[in-house]
Amino acid sequence: MQRKRCNLRLLKIRKWESRSYPASPASGVVPRTRPTENLEAVTGAQPFHLLSRDHGAGFWVLSMRSSSKYIVPVLAFILALLMWGYCAHTRVLVGLRLNAGGFPERNFSDLFPRWLGTRALLLDGRDPYSPQVTKEIQRGYYGRPIDSHRESDPIDQQGFAYPLFVVFMLAPTIYLPFTVVKLLFTLILLACAVWTVLLWIQVIGLEDRRDNLLTCVLLTLAAIPYASGVQFQQLSVLVAFSLAAAMRALAAKKFALAGALLAIATVKPQLAIYFIGCLLLWSGWRWRSRKWLAISFFTVLTVLILASEVLLPDWPFEFLAGIPRYLRYTQATTGVHELFGFVGGTIVFVFLAALIALVSWRAKSDTVDSDDFRLAISSVLVFTCIVIPSLAPHNQVLLVPAYLLLAKERKRIWEGGRIARALWSGAWLTLIWSWMVGAMLATSLVLHRGGSRLWDLPLATNPLIPISVFAALTPLIFRQLSRAAYVMSDADRPVDGLTL
Image (cartoon, rainbow, N blue to C red; front, side):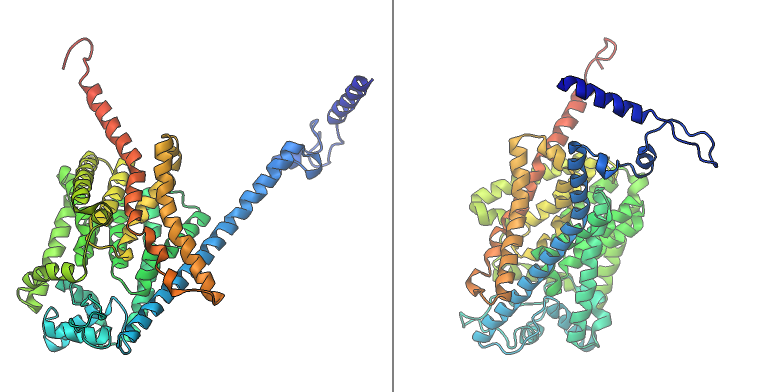
């Protein structure tokens, strides 16, 4: 009985769907269609009252996906605000420590030593590397010169410590008060940070939807390297922008512009040297088509060095002589030596250097938009963060392309097995730790429940971040190397019964 009722209902439904409807005067005869078919053709969806349970679930999934386009950028914006508040309060805590150490009001900015040294050279003709100018920098930076006999005084002498041609970048600001220069460079570096992310998204080939772009920009600004780098007016942000712009110029086949941008990036040579070496190898391998990259780089760099030599003869020797002193008073060390000790760190360094050399060599003949070349440049920048003798967070502004590449290749890495998935997750967890703890501390500050003892906790994973990112890239690196080895072995096989 129940089966008959079901059959009758099914028969009624079929008759209802097969009915013809009166023709409209404009179109003539209307084909036999269901009343909802035109609606489906226009909107791509069925009316709500005709949705089945499965269709209803799909409807809610689609609505959740559309709402997530707005929720994720909003959450990223809130995170960026909290992390900027965290970094701002960190500056306040450092200022309180200096006040307790007997330091009066100060110009607490990483740009100040370079700006004052530029003024001393261009306005007074004095050597910015000299001890006299260094004491003036300390007086303006800390409030008084550092006394080496007082244990509570900072050990960072805040010398000029940059190649002399950085004065050409700061020359337009020497007649302005430093408060104006500080605000001006904050805005410039903020724009450079945003632009850097957009340029790397184009170079890496990540999907450039608006919500993706906004989320990537906000998450990058929420990272401690960029939040503190912009607030402290750190020129590492400008160097990262120059490298990203150089890569975008290479993708557009503007080799002369890319070489000039690489030369500008040498204002912080420790951040750019390995990246420039990789690109010079790439340029030299196909000299005829890529020669203008190397020619432009060496031409602009030579002009900068010679023009600086006119301003201060023999400045390269003073700059090089100050490097050991700078490394000594900053207690410089690399991340691998900090984690594995001197012997273990040296072994890891040699292994990573050999791996990077091999990856760069394999990518020397690839195009800029190839996966192997993107992997090579991202790995070189991560390697730079690992081996640079400094644990300062602002140096990790170079990790943006690596994280974008990990986001893009997440499916390939996830299909590589448990180890690959664990390494990929570890790279993101070390970054999420700083976001999570920093946001919690900033929130506790708003609620007036924060304690200064915990304020260094977000930096606990700082030495681990570059190493974990490189480890997450290793499945892609070994896949590239194994694929290259397979191609070479396949080329050595006999062809048509003949051994080549």
